Structures are given as structure tokens and as C-alpha cells.
Image (cartoon, rainbow, N blue to C red; front, side, top):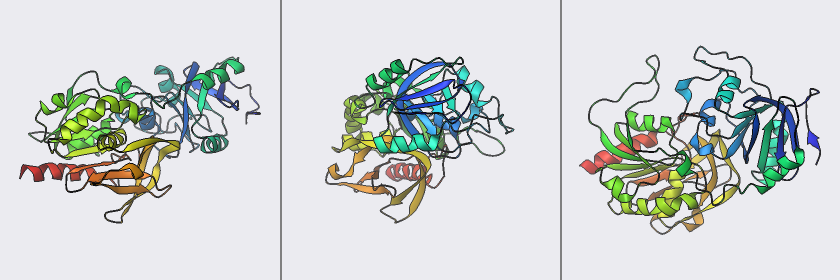
Length: 387
């Protein structure tokens, strides 16, 4: 396949696809080589939140919006302690930050955290390649001298096993339980703390984003976070009034080997349950449905989703490469939301019980805030159960 390079300068970065396609560009951030799955994200803002979203473990993100890096980076916008996405691809090289909140530029931030960035790439052509062949396996390399072993990079991409069958939740979950009381960011105070007794919620961390936990706290929840491998006994020992299942990366069927028994044990106690993203898929598996790998997944902040109960259309933020197969939902479990892009499942609920989940990210970090009401719905379900 021909190599793609839109610059006359000597390239310092290379993206090698498993099918042999080569995209040359300019490297920034860390040097070295990374092998991962390549996806594209259509969000116009929030690149720092995207790079620190644990759901992107094992993936290099191509941004279709050309201007990435303009507002720099800052600690407040990180969804976890370090970037989790394996790398970043953009059309234009990052510029100097233009934001009063910036504490570092994108290039320096990537270098500090060991993540490779590639600029000067025809991201439209790269996005078409992803759509046509599905999310490909790639090797990306950054060498300031521009020396690349092309055959070796293509070989690495071809030999990478991919995300199917891979449990990544164990890699990104917390090491031990902890409490969370920080609320959503608000002008001019920034982040504040929830005070006093609240609704006792246990959140299972499959790769939870900080802003999801903030949304729970803002909805009045007293949150205790447990690792992904927590058992039903671990959860119920805390006497929760509700259980939250977080987002996360990898193949849901692989994570389900230990997550499904836990969820089934919780469901037997008739507690309110709310799941997001991987948590949505985990709930579906626990109820007897199946999940399947998508061609190129959904990654962006402009995805229209229809609520089948109300008829309302929400613009949502999404990040997932697997989906729940709605055809396998058992009796008593209804499909509540669908994607208006491709009709794929975006939500389920148990009929007559306060157990529900959605595929998208209602915490809106980044993304529109159309779906924040789901956190309030979860809190209201807990209050209703109190009587």
C-alpha cells in the first residue's frame, strides 16, 4: 500500500496499520513505539478528558477535529491520574495553549506521561480506513531522527492480539476501596465537597471517570468505590442503598467472568442498580444477554440517542467498541434507548424494578449534558425505596 505523508519535511512519526498501510507524520510527546487498536473520536472539545478516560485503554485515538491542544492541559480536567489511551493522532500539530486554566501544553503533558502524539496526518483518510475495515491494529512510532523499521512495525501491528477476549478492567481499576465526596465543577468555586449524610451508594470501578463519581455526589450520594473484582459479599457488607456500575475498557465478556456473579448477587437483593458504558454491558450479561464487537465503535460527543419510553432524543457522549445485542435480551428486560446513527442498543431496564443502564456517558466529560437526569433518576429510586 502507498505511504501517506502530507508534509515535505522529513517525517518523525509513523503509523503502521496491520494491512500494510503507512501514514507518516510529525511526532510530539514521548518517543518510542506503541501497539494498540486505532479508533477515531469526533468530539470538538475535551481531548484531555478523552486521553485520561480509562475506557480508552489499549487504544490510540485519532481526533477528527483538526485543532487539538489549543487550551493546553490542567489537573482539574483529568479523569484519572494519568493518560490511559495509548496514543494520539491529529491533523495539525498542537499550538501554544490559549486558556487561563492551562498549566501545561499538550506536547509536554504527553511527554511527561509517556504517550506518543502524531501530527501532520490526513485524519480524514485515516478515519475512512477505520470505517471501512473496522478499528485496525496499529503500531505508532516517534523517532526524532526519522528512522523506522517499517517491516517490524507492520509485523507488530499484525501480531497484536487485539481487545476481543481481553479483560482490561483489572488494569485500570482502583487497588483498594475509597470514599468519594467531590461534586461537579461549578463557576466560580470549582469543585466543592458534599457534606452530611447521603444516599449510600457502592460504585464498582471498572475504570470509573472522576466526573461520574462527582455526578453521583452532586445527586446526593455518599459514594464508596470498590475494585472491579469485588464480590457480592463485599458489596452487600457495606449495606448499600444502591449500586453503580462504572464505565471501563476491554471485552465485556472477559470482565464478566467475575463481574456477572457479583451483579447477580446484588440483583437478588432488589437494590436499585445503575450502569454506564461497560457497566451497562455487565448488567446485560448478568441478565442473560450477549455482547458483540462493533466494526469501529462509537467514540464522540455528538451521538443522537432516542429514549423509547419518552420519545425524547438526547445528544450524548460515547466511547465503546462492544455493544449489547438487543436480540438476546430476555423476557422482562426492555430496551429503553437506541442509537439514531445505527440502531444499536443504548439502554436497558428491568420491567417494574429500579434497575437500568445506558451505553453512553451521561456525566458529559466531555460532551453535552442532556442525560444528567439519569443520576437524579438513580437517586430518586433510592429515596423511593426508603419509603
